[in-house]
Image 1 (cartoon, rainbow, N blue to C red):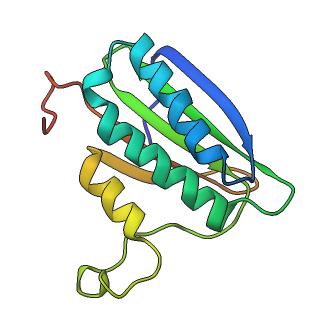
Image 2: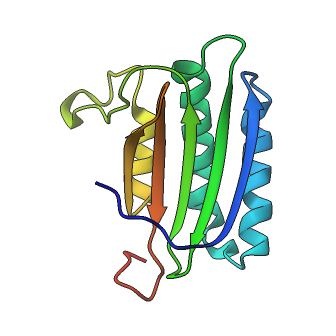
Length: 142
């Protein structure tokens, strides 16, 4: 069970199921990171935003529906990115032995390598795919 994040700042936006939404999602996230003085994390966060938004478009958002991008900055410095979609299925990282041959899931390999933690939560209908970065001064990998 995921613990409740005590939010200091939050930004939310919805995007239609269109390819141009991915660069728009990156720019939305970049603006939030600048406002929150987290530019040092921009490369890894923006790559994860791109991967999660692309996965939502390809696998999670039924035609005519939208996905939601949510960025949260906790009081403790935890940064969380969430992509909410109304599609079914459970995203998973491919098994290491087959990663090179897999057509899907390589984006989640990147997310799992760049974020300190990631996972999938439930919503009705659909799911929330999220990733988090711990503050650099609290046992993070950085």
